[in-house]
Length: 129
Image 1: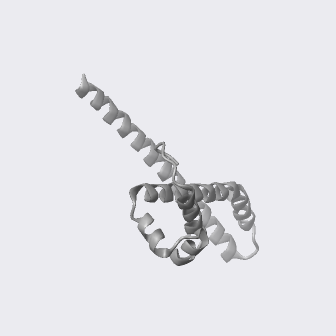
Image 2: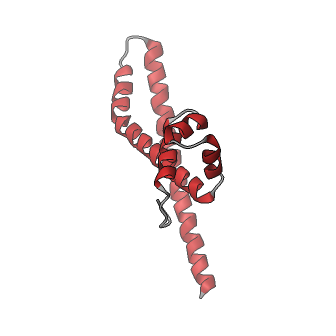
Image 3: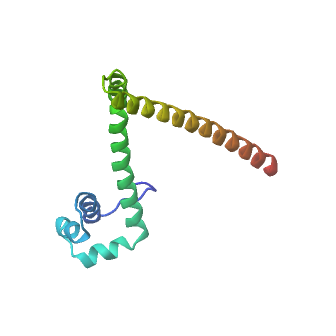
């Protein structure tokens, strides 16, 4: 776990069960603890932090998998542009254009945010001197 702390094995098992089970009751059963115990743990900051970190790792892994499929998705859209069905070709073209524009907008926003962060950091350093 981050922050130099390590949760007890039972709590780590409970977090794993929370990630796998659709309900807290099933997660408690899967972890071998009572629902009341799991509910109490969920109220504790350290357990919440561990659970949040575990969920973040799961989401990051899923995003990585999605990114790995991006090339194939673009290839498929490119092939659909050549479809004899005008509706399919139009939908592919529209999708490509919309996502291309959104990508440019996102990159532009990221550049602007990075510049604002540089300016804020420079001001902060000036104030501290």
